[in-house]
Length: 146
Image 1 (cartoon, helix red, strand yellow):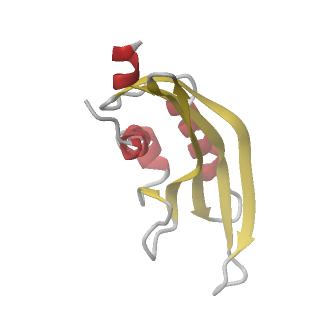
Image 2: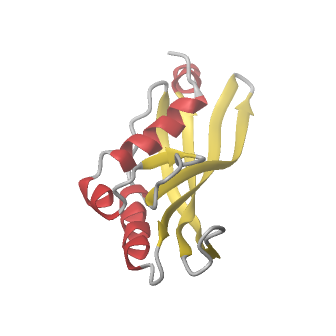
């Protein structure tokens, strides 16, 4: 089976999109990179870094770091705080099923938190909370040749 790094992205999105608790907190959805216009409570997943490690036989390990953050247009940020905690529960140390790969580890390497003013309504704030998550996977083909 051929491994495709975009399947790692899809696995992260699937875990987050299929969780009822997270959906209740961030009802506008989970997106890769950018949410559609008009959303005010959502989660964004962005790939920050990717690297491949090789052995003499070829690809051996892939390491990807994702920024996963809940975003909410709100003053106090209570829901965004709870959503970031839920994201952590869903990803930290949890197994991922990824076609073409064997999942090794998902772990948070750091927190993310930011607040910004709405460009149109300057009395409104956008709260951002989440973390940087490192995902380590081995292509199935690499394990088969080991």
